[in-house]
Length: 106
Image 1 (cartoon, one colour):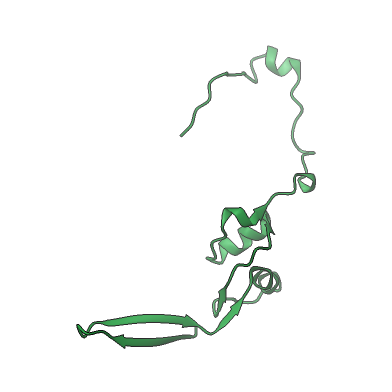
Image 2: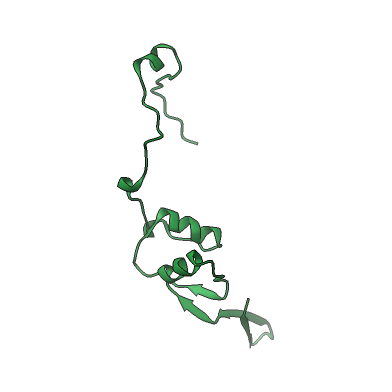
């Protein structure tokens, strides 16, 4: 990773290290580069106000880029629920599924 180090001397002769990445991109460009298989470790991702899909947030997270929760949107219409099994009366009567009015928060 290409990093420049700048050392500043304070009055107490303490050295502070400041790192700066050379290239800045927004989240959309970071996603595009990652989807193409590129390494973005040399880039600094600067988030703008545009929202990203949850799967794109996961892609960024896998590359150590934390996405603010308010920038993630979920498109419920795009979620495929066809593999969710239907709940039948037989499931409830047999005890296979039990309804519990208690809510557990951990």
